[in-house]
Amino acid sequence: MRTPASDAVNAPRLGRRAGWVLAVGGIGVSLIGAGALLPWVILFRGLQPISGFTLDGGYLSGIAIAAAILSIVAGRSGGSRLLRPLATLGAVVVTVDALYAINRIAAFVADPGPTGPLSQPAPGPGAEVMAAGGILMLIAIISAPARPGVLPSGYAPRLTIGFALFASAWIHLVLAPQHLAESAVLGLGFVGAGLAQLTLAATLVARPRAGVYYGVIVVNVALIFFYVVAVAVGLPFGDHDHGSGIVVGSGEAIDLPGAISKGAELVSLILAVWLLGRPIQSEPTRLNTDRLRDGFVTR
Figure 1 (cartoon, rainbow, N blue to C red):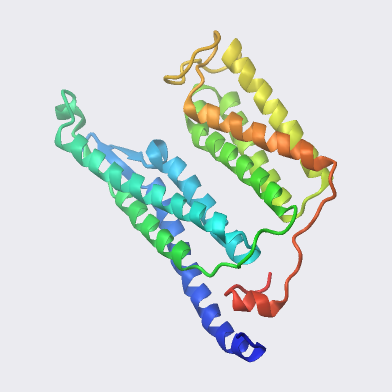
Figure 2: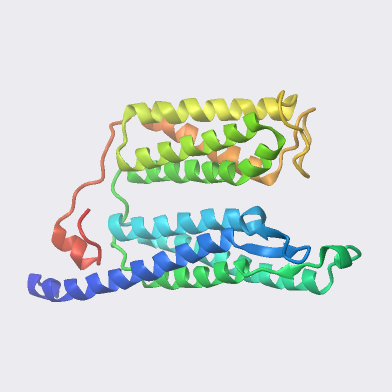
């Protein structure tokens, strides 16, 4: 049977546990970010490093950030039965994909094909650094204290909108360098769309207001409209060759990142319309002793 005295004894222990978990998780996320920036492959005797962000590292970094946020929400607000497995899955995906990339790169370096004598590829340290960060993140997520119970009423749909916006925003930011190479207008549009969606996601989760829902609706309707035009007839700037995908018009093909981005925008748009006419509920404040018991300090 728990008593206030036992809570007082356990609170410092859980607080220390939360401290080292946050430290390990922070180091893991930092290593994942460094792994995305470091080269995964180096060509032409070191003259052309290819960063992980250009390869798989950009998307893996976004998955890692999402997993870290899910773990923090599970510790502070509840819903750990769903959020912790999702966060764990995210860390596993990052780790496994980075380890797989190490093997793929090693195979490519060992047999680069006919262009090998010219390109002379060599492995970079980025994939190994990202794999190490993924392992640390996985340890932190599994070990992190989690608040029991479900998410507060009204918080789950806002969290869903926030993560849908985050997914679409991150895809826009990852694809921005590619589109900047095609057209400055197109590339800056991707950067602006990503930053706008990130801002809306953070604002909606932290301080929901009716105006934020309107912002989500307007931004997502505009982005979906521009994408439909780009697929149907093409935009007046940039080329229309964006890799393989499903061709349904005279514009660019529908590829997997585009489909995921528009699907996430559609989900957040529908939920924003649904929540717009409902009372806005903030997350209820809990006692400080409860926060210490679960290993997290008061906000």
